Image (tube, rainbow over all chains, first blue to last red; front, side):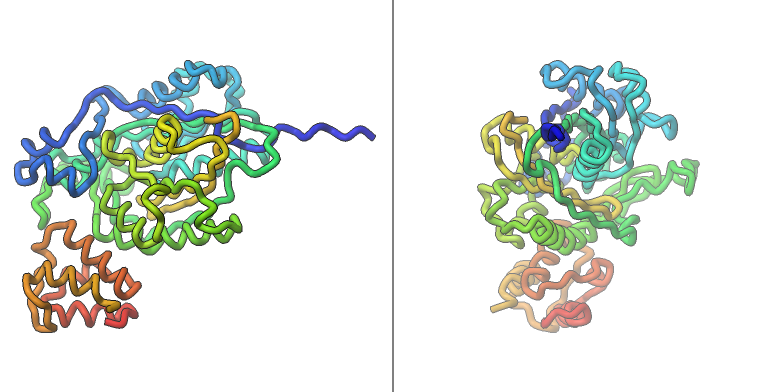
Length: 350
Length: 74
């Protein structure tokens, strides 16, 4: 009996592109609008110099399409070859239909292409990789397009510095492809969820639980002097930070154990780029060398589910990452939801 | 020595050597100072304190009691 050649069924990250909206929000402008913080102080506190902000008529689908078009232009894959589209957003164009369906049409993907939205924030990219891997290795699909796209700026009150200084809009497109690699190229993963933290990063009104109304539109000022209504994004920074200090080191250790590797086996750690302060505290707590720990948010801010793919793409572009490197990606935040996963840079590059 | 990070952050916030009766005003602190204190408590005692309860502490002694209540050897 003839033995089949090894089937090309190992999921591998093959390409990452991203799109940042044109409009820039820098610290000088924030300082002049918010008053009490200087541009230098904002940079010092957040590690962020500039954020990209979607135009009023620019939605998650637009950002996602732009990121994906850049991927197709690179020639790594033709649009007709995409078997499944995963679209991660918490700021969809509509309640319904799924943004993934709109994007399938706009990108000209086949009509026998699967497409679905999933609602996760800072953990979304790692979740998306796990889903894509499952589609490739479990169902035998060849090409899965994972798009992460957020326009959080549309949720943010202009006078709420706790979030306005941090978040930027962006989308990233990641191609997960079947390969004949003999070793695992994506994974293993660990996941975590603790819905007790739901109220600590939330847009309280605008959904079915509390539809937008005159009442939810009333703007109030909190103890820190930040203004917002219930229609806006609220973040309890200290609570989120406390959660992170507990959950992230545990997830990292859990993944090291599951992958049966030592911390020194990981070439590069890319955590969700929340803000520089949080990253630095987490790095110190986990005793990771700065050389093996990514901080990549100065020019675009916290772009939620796109921080990890953008950091990956930039690290590959400037040589911080090379073929064969083993990367640990860790997403954590809104939900609370977190996930960590291993990514091997394939020999043919990303 | 275990408390070094915690005491050093308190010294900065209180403005002098922190004693149990030293007054603290978490609600008036800069948000980054709150995060820094949370991080120093985590580093010194390997626990995280509930932020709403931290905000209610008015003395260093109360803060130490809160840390003990979540299992830290403060």
